Image (cartoon, rainbow, N blue to C red; front, top):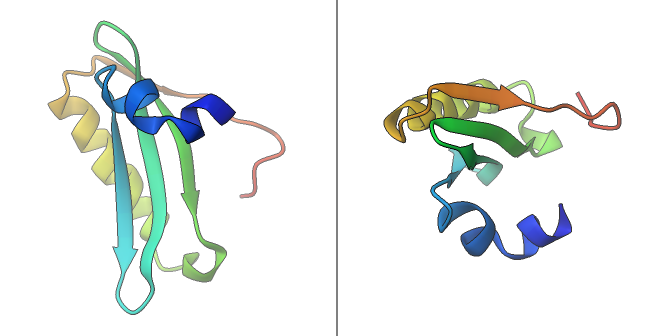
Length: 89
C-alpha cells in the first residue's frame, strides 16, 4: 500500500490505471479514488477516500459513478473492490 501511495504514477497510471478526484464548491478537492489495472480488462477500485468534512454531500457517490464510467472507458470487463474492516464508513 505504501509503495502505491508514494509512487502513484509508476504503480497506477503507467500500468494502465487512473486516479480520479472529486471537488466540492468552497472545499476544494475532497476525495480521490484509484483504478488499478490488475489484468487484461480487469481493474481494482482502490484507495477511495472522502474527507470527513465532505461526507453527507454525495461526494463519494459522485466519485464512485465517475470511477465506474472511467473503468468502462479504459476497457474494464471486471471491476472489483477489496474492503478492509478497519476502513471508516
